[in-house]
Length: 336
Image 1 (cartoon, helix red, strand yellow):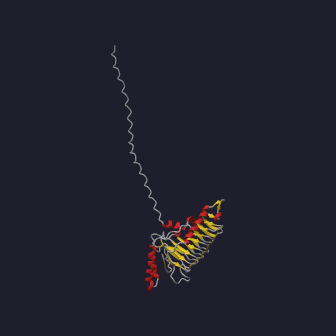
Image 2 (cartoon, rainbow, N blue to C red):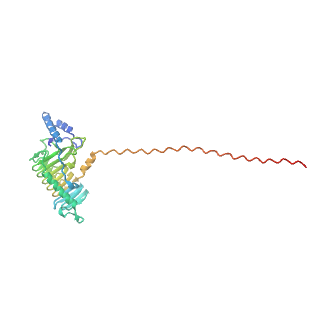
């Protein structure tokens, strides 16, 4: 797994960009004297990455039932004027205003209760989150391992060309990671992307993680197969967009209007001012990309029974019988 670099392009949309389109964009945007060599190198890296053994998924267990989870015993969730689709769980308290579709579990740890009974669902989800977090922490990188703090392009965006395009794999930053540009993940619905960050992870204001199809006929990656693992705080600038599951060993802080299409799971607090978290977004996308089977053709109505033959016209009534002739008169008697 590797990454290739592309300059900004207005038509890099997640539903139209294919491997062929990547080549066309690089060919158009790179200087002529070096375009061929860099194009060839980029496509070789991309093709080899897509041909390797698929990366295994990250199993988050029942933590996947939550859009937001603050697992620590003193952790809390504060979401003001926000929109959350999915359940919210916290170790200490939940403060929420806005639109929430799902269930709130305000107490975690060993004291978790709902209606006076132990809340096993939340406790199991917290345990599953920690299991997944530790599994990713020890996961071996199959992509680049870097000591640089840069994820994406520097600020201002000069070299390398932007945005950065990642293919499937596990990437590792040995310290903090700062995303100052859009991040483009190129692959298909079964591909897995894992980003391991030893320190803080920050995505700048108005920057976005985009999912792009390597093969337009198959579709782009899905949010449930993208994991952002940070051992420290995760900070999103105002209006930033992350797609995938965040696993933080500390806390997650949203800037105003920031959005997570996936899940925000952490050990510490989660603060969302006028933001959005939608944990079923990936399911909606899968449904949208899967054509519905055509409705069955209606069965033709059963044939009508044949019409009965017409009734013969009634026979005319027989004429009344002729009156009987009068009896013959006796012959006259002779005179005496």
